[in-house]
Length: 129
Image (cartoon, helix red, strand yellow):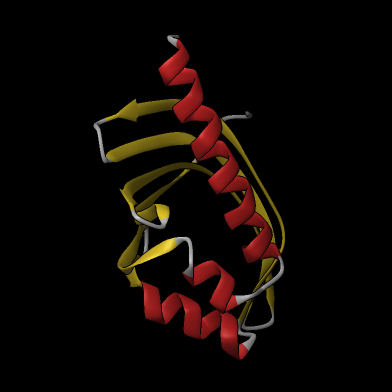
């Protein structure tokens, strides 16, 4: 890994850690600062818009207690970067407890305000991390 690749990986891991703290804090406004206006989550249930996700957090229908992520790879495409890793989180959705173990790919764009996520793709992990 070159110094530049290491620097980008460290920078994105710091963004991901701060974003994860905002999610665990269940702070919709803080979560929104890490995403573009058109951010979407793609998962087994389809596509979830940024507003739907943030509305679920604001209403208390979606809460998180824990969140962790281990970076597997980072791809530098200039003002776009792709981070793929293994993540786990716990929380409640409409009163029902959940625990997720997933492969996560986040696509980031770099703007004047730093790196923001434009797409998140989740795939349920089938093996132990």
